Image (cartoon, rainbow, N blue to C red):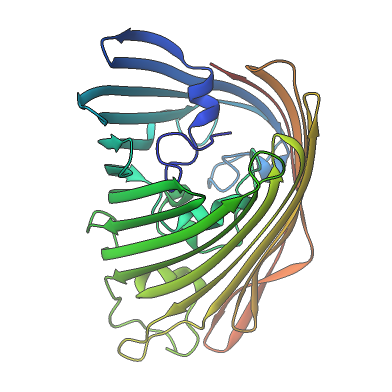
Length: 359
């Protein structure tokens, strides 16, 4: 898993990779680290990454993937560093792709007292208050609308400012340029407070984001019954709240989030407001870790997500771990409504057993 290191507000996924990264170069206030991971998973039919391919053979599969990251920094003035981080992922040829996909690509500045400013592909400032439930290795974090605009919410064209650990307070802001297919512009903000960090850390955070989309015109469908997949064609504002207590890697951990997303009406086309929430509880000791979570997303009277996620893992050392994860659908979810007809999709249970080596 990736933890907070470069930008605790928005680049919060890096530390597991960086903690085990190999120092390639370190001299006179400049450093270069290489890290990454290799993983192999035995996935059930519906967990297999290529299940949705038209020609998929729909069988239990052993699938692999690899990640490589580069972390560099150098001092340019007293108290100011230039920082860069890039991470790429490639799946095995039998998986859903056989080419490198960029997860992160940022470059910018990190200061001792004024926070950090970076440019590139990463999460927006909205991520920090919602990230408290993004703790599972394979699944989870599907209840929010955060990832609707880009894979995992890692959006390109970001300008992200972060000020962390100011007597326990943290602040973040980001601006989204017109780099995504449907986004004309966007912005996000967060504020949080963490206390009792030395004994049993407790965190409260709030966030807001807004996006101006490229609208879809001349749709041949009833505008009052818009399918959920058209959400990325409408302007959206969302408000989020996150809470966590404890350390997910040591002892007890409890976290929960709530997000409210409102879509603007344009030329008679609109979506109903979305309510999302997730809760997670876990315990970790002596290399063992256990997590349980529930995620739910409602849009009007439609249930789009309703899942229970379970995970158990064992860290043999700082580099190598084994784990198993399962996602159980709690029932049928409403896929969409078109022309007054409601379509239901039976949720699928997912199972995975994996090995992961981080370096």
